Length: 384
Image (cartoon, rainbow, N blue to C red; front, side, top):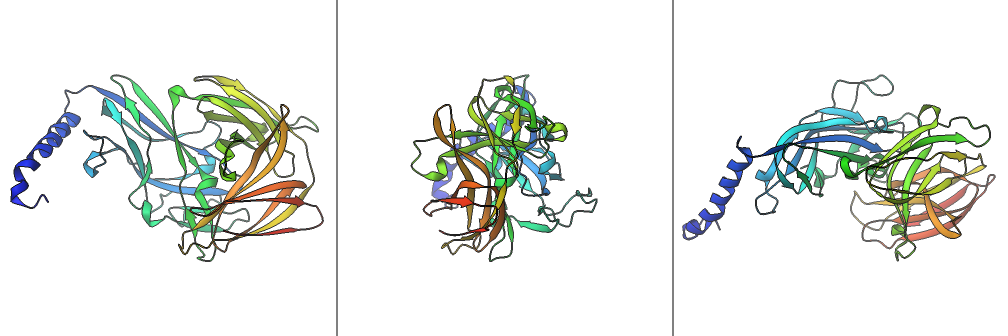
C-alpha cells in the first residue's frame, strides 16, 4: 500500500520512527557493551568429521520487536570452515566480537558459506566442499543445505547487552542431530540444530571416563546430559538430550551446560552405559567420573521409509535402553541419527533389549522394542 499517495502521510510516522531508531543504534553517543560469540559442538561418534563453513554471524534488533531486514547487524565474518568434532571438551572457536548498543536483541543467525577456506581436513586434504561429512569408513559426503535456510540459520532466543559489560554467548552446534544420512535422493542433508548458552549462567561438568576392568582412561566415549520425562505422551519427548561431548585422550571430558538436574549418561560401543543423576547451579563447576564395563555386542540393520513426498523428509532414530536408577525406571538414549526416506544404517549395539524410537515431522512416532543377539543380525524396517 505504500505506493499509493493517499497513504503518504500515515507512512511517514513509522518511517520517521525507524529512522530515529537507526540513528540512535549507530550513534557514538549511545551507551554500549560488548558481545562475544563462540562456537562449540555437541559431539557424536557416528562420523570422523563434520565440516561447516560459516561466512557471517548476525544479531537482530528492532524498535518494535518485529523482524525486519534492516534490524540485522553483522558482528562477525569468519569465512572459516570448522570441523565440529574438534570443538569438544571446552574447546571453542570465536565467531565474532563487537561493540553494540545496549538493550535487548531478539535473535541471531548464521550465514553458511558455499566456498570452503584454505585449511585441510583430517586426512590432510583440502576441503572439496564447504559443508560435508566424512563417514566412519572415510567416505566424503557433501551436505545439502535446505532451501529454507539459504537466508541463514536462525536461533530465536533473546539476550541483552549491558553498558560497559561483555555478554558472552556460546552456540552449541549439535553435529549428530544436524546431519541426515542420504536416502532415495542420494544426498546427505544439513539440518542444523543449535542451542545458545549465556556463559554467565552456565555450569561446567567435567571428569574422566575409565574402563571398569583396569581403571585406564577410555577415549571416544560419549558423555551426554539428558532429561527423562515419564509424563510425555509422545515417546519422542520422553528423552531430551541437552548437550553431549566425547572423552579425549586419557578419558577426560568437559560439558558446558545450563543449570538443572540431568541424567549424565556415559556410553561407548562395546560397553554398557553408566548413568549418574547430577544437579548443577549457575556458575557451578562439578566433577563426575564414569567407569564403563565391557559387554557383548550385536548388529541392527535399520531402514527408514517416510510417506511424506518432500525430498528432504527424514526420520530421527533414537536408540534407547530402559534402566533402573534410584528405584525408578527411566529411559536413556545411547545415540541417535537422522535417516532420509529410503536410507539405512547398520548399528552395533549392546546385546539385550533396546528401544528404537522413530519420529518425523507430521508423522506418528513409533516405539519398537528389539532383542539384540551376538549371532543374529536383527533387521528393522521403519515406515512412518
